[in-house]
Amino acid sequence: MAITHLFDRKDPGKYATGRQFRRLGYLMAAANPAWSIQISGRYPKSMRNPYVVVCNHQSLADIPIVSRLPWDMKWVGKASLFKLPVLGWMMRIAGDIPVRRGDRRSRAQVMIDTKERLQQKVSVMIMPEGTRSPDGRVGEFNDGAFKLALKLGIPVLPIALDGSFDALPKNGWMFGEGSPIRLHVFDPILPEEWVEDGTALCEHVRKLIVDQIAEWRGVDPGEVDQLAMISA
View 1 (cartoon, rainbow, N blue to C red):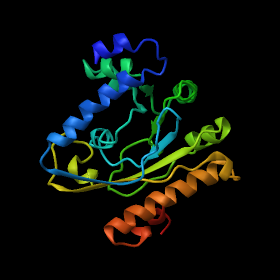
View 2: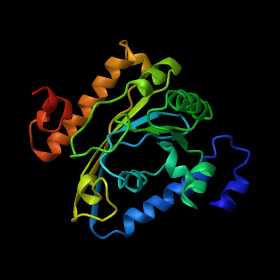
View 3: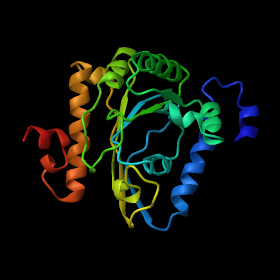
């Protein structure tokens, strides 16, 4: 990765450097015999035509699992991860974006950094729940990423993920029992095709993800939707 970084300096988006980092995640997922990962959907032809990529968040296993997709995108992640030895250094040179939860200035800086990466023709991955699901259901989405996408005229690329909660449960580093892990890449949502505001787009994408997970599990969407369970 360091060698790639040396030859990647002319590219402000550091795409090749980031791609090497994602390959590490790919190998982690591929080397785990308990993880059976099924990927569906159509891949975009080029990720240098940037997207705001959004995905639900079930566990720390999401990162290596999503890294199975054959492209680089800069991840928005907890600032504490960037302080870890080796891993934090790799995240920084890959161009990933740190965020401190509950810090308004940090969230504002994330939007600035995200805009910069997109202008460098690199996609950015944001998990709009902001934290891992405590029970495998889909939580509330923050609409900031969707508003930014519409403001900049950048397509949104939704991804639905299920099965990783059991693969690596929250509040622990022990691998769970083997279970099918499914990943679906939806068709991009073009900003010119969306006439409503970012909040409405956020709700639309969240529904797509909830419905897809419910279909995989063979249950009513209300059983997957954390907000529906709260209101009930």
